[in-house]
Length: 403
Image: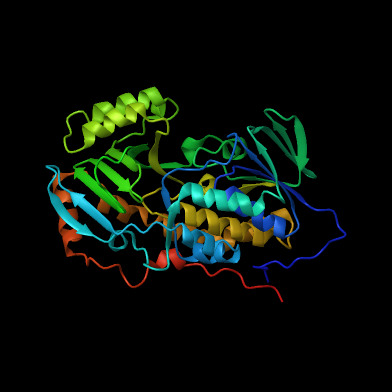
């Protein structure tokens, strides 16, 4: 039986070594559990420090049990964002409906968490920083996987050998490219691009989201509290603009062009976007891999199975995946552990990735007919949150404690 909550103790055998690439959510969560299971853990992160700040994220279903077992639930509950209203606007700025966000997201009031991304990453880092080696400002250059380990060449710190390497470095994972090949073969584009940035809250918004829609375009203002708002722009596009993904100047020009004729608050949002120093732009996409590991290298979180923000489950899958990978490696060698991780977790991932279709239809219709149908569905929803979340959120039961 896989141990779910490891017990402390000393071991006379040498610690197995693991390198984790990425220090966002999945990486530090995995570091926490592998350290508890007796691994010597190193985390490499190309940023100079843990990335605080960022837009709010959700923790739901099975992932709530993961953070409880980590001892972080109470801390995260203290910084929970209680967004109470989601208002949809039509193309002319008139109100379609105003309701509780859970009616759309499938969240459960009083149980699920919504926190600023930085609050979660800070909590994860604090839980492991004294026990885990962090290499900030560096990244993996090459991997040489062989029978006795993985030789890793870093871009700034020479060469070291590890028993296992895990890529938790996001949708555009460099680790995945090194071991499985170019991203395009695993990238499932869902037909949209989006941008997120912060701007001054000159709108009087507090603990609420306002979303404007026209066919194929959407703009939203998200206020967590009464401070700066998170501005969001989304548009439909048949093919992903790969040339824009790595160039902020192209991103700004593209967004300005797409939204040039839009009214409501969008002109001010575009002006703020040109001044923002935290613009994040990407395609709405998923990652689908035939396998989540190769040799002594495994993939985790968005690097292995990004579900897209349409599902609201990216963070939860990262937390649950980290728990399951660590538990699978606790008392197995890497080959058996990686196989168990995928066997026991893939159905949960597949169910949550499947939520993306529903999310796209609800939030971002691409034709006038779809928009009208969407609005009619929204008007029929109860203003109260549903009693239970979507089944996919809790479709996996974590392994029990080993006797």
